[in-house]
Length: 340
Image (tube, rainbow, N blue to C red):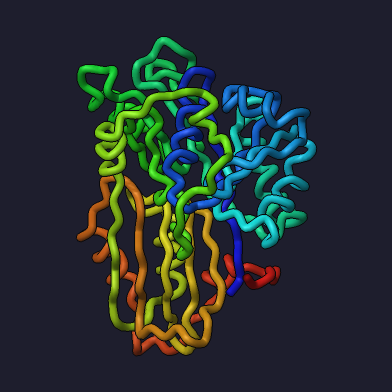
């Protein structure tokens, strides 16, 4: 099976809560091995960086996670190293501050994925916004990156009386879903599928949480995790490639990530994965066989009935013969990656 490691970009103004979010991901990794790329000894875990040593050094954290530093010029090479099978990472998080503007960082990542970092996959642009205001990038003056985001994280919603107007204003301009959270409590399962392996975190290693001495509120964390949801669609009958591609390209409302297996007329099944409107398609293993489509959508405020109806509308017309697969094959992964 081809193996690709999602690389998630975290952006947001100083004080919006990026470091808190990354620390939470590490604290709640639950067996997910995460690589964190930090630039300039910036907002994320400055104490961890001091422990790690000089720029470009790597320090080992709990749960098999790694932390390293780089500048924009070294990003592609570092991502190639972190996403190689030997690194055994499940997710890489890049904090945008100090590296580049989010648009430029997305371009750098896509160039790396298409070139040097062949085991990497685009995992989405996550933009953190401070609900409480008082810092650049608040909802009153939203970060321009919100208009590019695959996912907007509205942080510190517990510090405002009524977050509904803030959510509405962001949802009016954000192309992707907006997730309200407390203390940066973004569930890693929204970003990456938890690995099959399980086990206690490795002992004797410092985590960002231990270094920064942050307190946690489990009740608030669990409440925040309940804010995202998943919808499974299992339907018989092949789909029309052009209609299905148009459905994915439009970005279904509220969907951050989707995955599954789809059959088209006259063809073997394909594995489909999306983040925002970034689409990846590859032939399914021979052991996988579906008559139609089995898909799971992850996001915020999902309309299950609308997703089922949209997939029904993608049904192939038996009388039309075998349609061209080109609308889907344009997203096929062209380079082979190592199996693990």
